[in-house]
Length: 146
Image: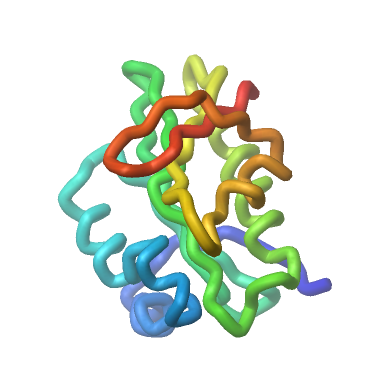
């Protein structure tokens, strides 16, 4: 398997990251990377990275990172359609969780998941996230104790 890393999105790498897309039948489950990056630039608590497999961009992850609260929320996770089911999403999330564990007061990380066909909820549950039973913005809320 390729080495998976999280890398800062730069002027030189932004276009390949923005062009990554999920499968058409998944497009209702996650916002395009261009929208996520735009949101991140206007939210000071956004922490975002491209997911790379060796030297190839394969996905994107964004965290709401508020050490003052402390509140840590996986805002976005996407793996491009042609790179799914290769372990890149799992490894990207493991790296993201490793980062969260270094943050002040981090004891829980939260993620939302749109229910229905193709929902990523089983993926998050395989990483140890537990459905809280709460619904926020039409998404099931899942939490992982760190």
